[in-house]
Image 1: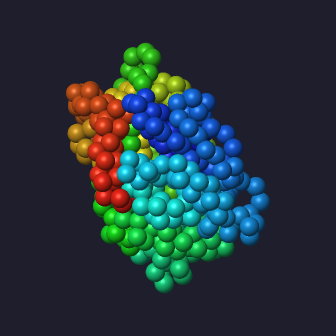
Image 2: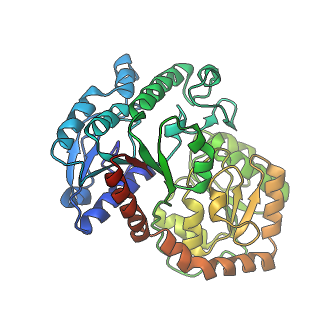
Image 3: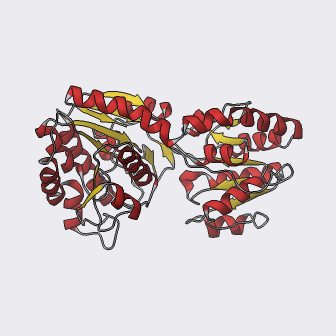
Length: 405
């Protein structure tokens, strides 16, 4: 199950790739999603059921949309009809996303019919109304218990207080729907599990299964020994692009920014010496990596499983400098394959930039990454991902509960 049957984000891609991989292994797969369109390849390999529901952020916000985001009765009824075709004795329901189109109402049919369920926690929605555990107006991470009085009072939403109210309604409905489901939750990183699992109010088991990463090598050879430090991502405050630019200015080393967002005009004005390249295709970004000294990932928020640092290691054996406030630190060993810095601290990031400007340090880290590339590739392959999920599916079916991944 996914909010979308087209690849419009990381969660949808993992859901679609997983469904296709399971079908290729001979499993009977049905893909239930919102929207009106499905990935062409998915539609040829699995049975696809679409609800036609639009994303809550599409078009004008209305009271009707808000109600549907909390309880989508149509999606629930359609899903009940789908489940009626299957037996709980041999079927597992795998939830990937539901917050945008389907709503928490889709959990109830699986619970009432006694299906084993798996929930992949691609973000923090299971333990946070805004799904990020982040206070956007203050630009700081959140440690408040979800759904508590402090949580209700906190103005943390990216959009508005009204949007927070709707998300609180969705969170309350979700908590009610999950009660009694007894899912097993599979997180996408140890970092994520440590920050949210203790907040979950429903009975569950939990595992960690790293998301698959598709990172083919770039064409050409590495030429980044004297290249710029590279930032790639949305130009928003929570992603730390401003910290990156400030650190470049402090350290005096060259850098480049790939991406776009609301901060672009301000940052390009404040830092005229830094090239802002806009969005690049996947192939172009891999070529950029081959010409860069290192990747910098300065995110301020608790990103659950950022892919870019791993992609940089696989595509170009690129050392990475990462914030200590996100799961990127799980994939970068400090002092071995890259460096960690204090989140939001441009002076500490400048220190790391100067350290990696040393040719000997840079070469040593690249060699360490090269020596681990085979292991990293295998660990993040789709084959390994499916191999890890299958025994979890079997356990979920046997328990008649659910598994959240």
